[in-house]
Image (cartoon, rainbow, N blue to C red; front, side, top):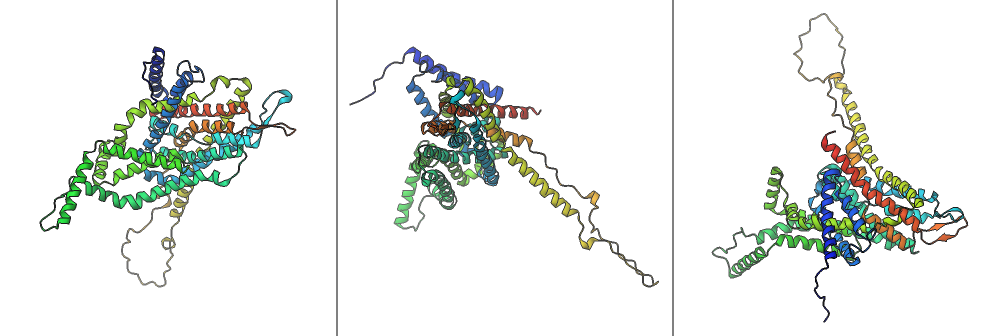
Length: 529
């Protein structure tokens, strides 16, 4: 019978693992306090300790693969926490803005990526140019926003409960779904397939999962969940009064036993919440929907069920008054947070560092193209700030129109001229009542809207970070021969390692620049300068 024999770890392995674990948390703490971007430190540690620089001398290939797997669990837990702590009412109100921000953030990078077609690759007579498929594949890798990075940035900048944070969450969720669609589009086009259903299936499945969850929450859970809680409540009088039949007494006894059994299960809340997360992630995997979207929906569903309990509704109101954690957030804080904050999430960002081929990226012909392309991709995502300004100017125009219409006096208030027809003295009219409107100069002006410079800047910079989805799409595009080049005579090269490195440069610079820039703006805002 096969088994894994237990053996003592060599001192080199023990020291490398200990230093890796301690440095992840130490450097994150330092970067968080200095720059509000601890995840950048974790990515850098992953580059140094992983395959890109150290190879397998510090961490074995099996260890790095294990760190990558545990890091993905951290990503799921991070998004699950985002679903628990996101208030769905502001998210619904900001859905239009989120859709607009996500749309601009998707279209602009893809459009700007076609500028790669003018960049020559190779030297002299061996110059090649990217094909339109290569430009689209590069844009697909840079069009999505890292959902995990978004939640970390929001937490470090203290933006979870702000309107900007709500808009960012909605836009990043849509980007994640579209990013999953882009994975299928890039691979199918690179392999020469063009079946529409293979391309459309992820977005249809993700949208269906979201709609079904909303229907279940409002039309199934809302009426039934409080009844279940009341049935199993220990405070309910479960005894059968006099005159009840034996069947009613038996039912009351069964109810009492069920209640006692349920309340004797240790850590039941944690188990049920984790079960909801596992069910959603499993369903999403089988129907080819977004796993991260499923984790977010699971967090929202758990938070929604918590708030349906009458006692919990009262506790939530008291917690809001005293500034305490809501029950769902407290659940995550007590059970998940110690493991995710210090182990799983640092492993996730370190695994991003594992996937950066840093030693192959500093060739001069690759470096300048990569920097220019990264600048274009930063501009492409920063254009989402135009949506915030468009809303601001639209509100200004509406406010001005309402103010102008309120200043025009109605016909009943226009002055009238009365002619005297006889010399008979007229009776003195009664004193006029105070039914007059203010003069135009005294009409109160509407509240002046302040330009949303800080909100637009924070949203623009927070959307810049690409992260894990960018690396995934770029790697799949390279494997499926989507980064094709062509010569003027029509000769085509199946895949270009040089173009792949340029795209990786764009992902790396955007992933690091976004959190650093958001941290700088947040630090400046907090200092009041």
